[in-house]
Length: 373
Image (tube, rainbow, N blue to C red; front, top):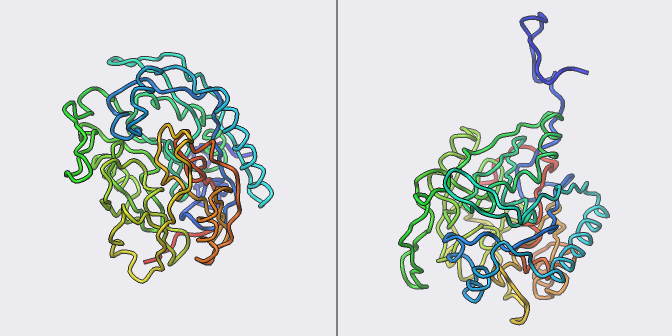
C-alpha cells in the first residue's frame, strides 16, 4: 500500500493523478444520483449557550425558552421521537441503495472556553450546516454561533477516513467570535425595514447551508451567520472552476438558503413564494414551482425554524425526492412537478430546526462537474 505522502525525489518517481485513489468524496449538484450520505444525530441535543446571535433567527415565542434553558437538554421525549425518525430516514435511504454514515456523539453540555468567551454546545443533527462538499473537497465551515464552535468534531472520524481514502479536506479560518463579530446594536428591522444582519465583517463566517450547488455555479446568500467576508473566502478557495452568485431574498431573518430556493434537477426550481417574489435571472428558462403552504399545525413545537421547513427536501437523483410523510400538499405538488416522492416521517425532527436536506451531507453523488446555465 502506498503512503499518503510520497517523496518523489527520493524514490525517483513522479506522482501523477493516476497514483491517487479515487476520492470517496465527490458531489457537484443537489440532484446527481446519491451514493453515500452522512445523516445527523440528536444524541445529547441541548439548548445552545445563550448569545445575541440567536434572537435574529429564533421564532419570537422561543426567545425566553432559549434564554432560560441555555445549556439544558431538549425534552427527552422530543429527542427520542426525532431519533426514531432519523433511524427511519436512514433505513429508507439504505433501501434506496444509498450508503449511510453517522457522526459520533460528543458532549454537548460540557462548558468550553476560548480566550474571550465560554459556551456549551447544541447537537450534531445538521451536517449540512457544518460541512460543505464541493467536488472532491469536504470543507469545515467557520460557523458564527459560539455553541457550534466544536460541532465538526463529531464528524472528525469520518473526515479522517475520507482524507485517507483520497478526498481533499479543507477548513475555513477558525473564527475568534469575539463581540466585534456581532452588531452590538442590532435590532429587528421589522418586515418592512431594510435587511440588517447581526454578523459583521470582522472575520469570515459561513454555514454550508447558505450555499446550494448547481455544478460550476454556486448559489449563495448573506445571512445572520454568513457574511461577505466568508463568501469571498470560499470564492477564492474554490478558484476559477466555480462561479459564486450571491442573491438577496425577501427575508428579514435569513439563515440557510435551503428553505428559500431549492434547485431540484436541471431546469427545475422550487421556491418560497413570499421570499422569492422574483426568480433570479440566472434561472431564466427553468420550470419554477412555488412551494405549497406548509401544513405543520400551530401546536407542534418548532424551536429553531419556521413552518417553511417543509421545502427542505432531499433529492436522491433527478427523479426521486424525500418528502415529509404528513405533508400531503407537498407530496401532491412533487408528483405534479414530475418527481417521485418518497415519504418519511420527520415532523418531530423538524422541531430541532431542519428537515431532510439539513439532516444530511451528500458525500458522494455520481456525476461530473458541468454547467447548467
